[in-house]
Length: 171
Image (cartoon, rainbow, N blue to C red; front, side, top):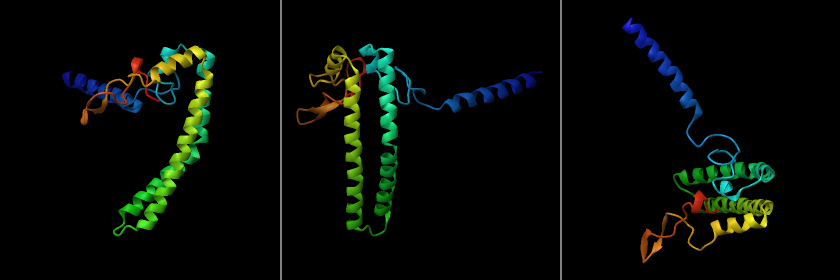
């Protein structure tokens, strides 16, 4: 009887541990506010008191941006792989490496420009009051949060690029 109970408990443990592993690590799936992962609005959104319409519009903008940059991101990924393979050669060719690095840098610049445009569009969804509140989170008045920053001549406690007040990222 003891062996039967141990066997049943062992099978139950194996069955339920598979469910935990299947979820994967991270903050969860979805596109919502708060701890949801994926294309969520981040921890700032809860502090801005967004309306349901604003949340939907921001999610739509994020999805549109994600889709518009997909090809560019895939190309960048491929160019980075090509660059790594050039570096991995026994005798790396400087001209080839510099040419490929320039391609990678150009793609990164395009992605960054598209990202800036996306962020400006997202800010346009906010009310003037919400924009002022967001500006308070993102201002350079000491709201960097814990992190590392230059202080004195070396690196130590100081302003860093950590989370700002209310868990708001510095974007």
